[in-house]
Length: 495
Image 1: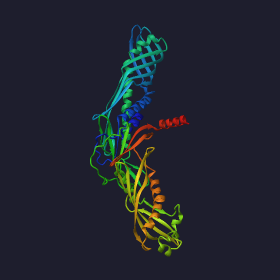
Image 2: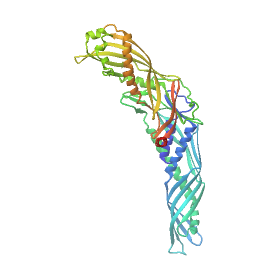
Image 3: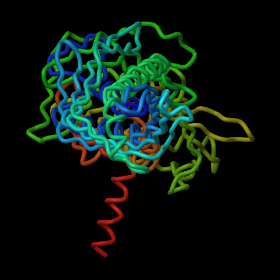
Image 4: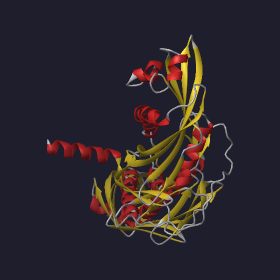
């Protein structure tokens, strides 16, 4: 089969898969492809295989045959082209020995040109003729067995066995006295069958080699933005069971300037279930809470969790006059001066996956700064502990979140303007949290976290499951063009 077949399908198998019982130590993103997903991948492979084989041109065949009463005939078959392929049955199996794909009962149609010359002592001037022919192959079988191994964080693809077998073959000649020449072509049936078998087998070998080179070229880390990269190196060897293919990647965030070294996130070896709550989904992608914790640590260390607020929906809050009854000392010392709020996180947000949702604890320092004569004067700092839940959803091929405020508490960290009445300030802090801090964080979360999937394919009808300390996305997979065309058709029908 042509390289594009393997690129599309085996990438689908290798990037989005994880097994039922795979130990995932140091692998924080995993997935599972179900029998439904394997069936989809098999049908995709066959479809793309047919597209790549059709119009495959086989090498020219030349042979000679002794024809009674005529002499020695030299026959040449050229422009041998596969014009159509039909598959009657197929199967894909996984196990300890690898991934086995078998296509059986295939029908292949070919076209070709023929020419011959006959020379003998009876016909010294020679006889020649030419024409076209069609060939029908029935009962063709194609099979291959491949295996995947981890090689220093990348996948090594090995072709363990492959081949093509042609069953029956019939030939029909057009041009000239075809009935007379059928005898000549019958002598070449074996050559034609061998050419088909060798041509398709060579395509299998060529495709596997190109895909292996592609897998070896995959990066071990992917740039997400100017701050962070994602460690996508593979962890452990793929595990092939009778109904799944298991693969895990590291999945942790690292700061761009850092060298990729083992990080201090650990988990016990455990078994990941392929269950999707009884839903028949093609794939299940699971993300450990340590992935989110590593992201939190990276962006905090890089100083990306700081914000200066000098505009609010209620702009009067950012003037000392609004505070004259709440903090009289502030207004007395800085009458009618504008202010700004310097908001920074005092520690990385704590992310915890539960059996119901995603929880977040965020510690924020809000420093009140007065702007006087082009000078920024810090006058007080208030610490805020925010408890929030995160609503998670799938948008396109990204997992995105939205923080929902559950509760918060405040205390005075320090003050240069005397003691503050925290009960009075509480309402102001609530306004700041709801109008500035949470919208800012949700804007960041809306960018989403990219789920591993090959280009051109997307999640469809995805559902989210929680199973501490994992969050899982169970979904079907579709070719994006087909999906969008289907959506447009549905919309047109409804309208």
